[in-house]
Amino acid sequence: MVRLPLTPAELERGQRLGALLRRARGQRSMLETALDARVSPETLRKIESGRVATPAFPTIAAIADVLGLSLDAVWAEINQPERVVVPTGSGRNAPSRLAS
Image (cartoon, rainbow, N blue to C red):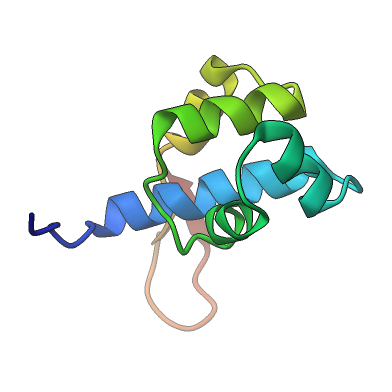
């Protein structure tokens, strides 16, 4: 089976997922978290670093459960629209605003 390359949006969502899990893990060790979730520490490391941008649902569900995260909260966090800075004028010192 040939796996299609991930889109930029999927890669970005994977980065957001990894960042969320790192924040939620806090000072807890990666090894402890992985073992409690019954995933390998290498799998958790790859997810947190964004190298696995589309992990299996049961894997995310297990990690989220160990970290006390609801799947609704995970979904909402990783699907936030990208905030883009839109210039309001021209030139180097022109003000800018955030667009969603």
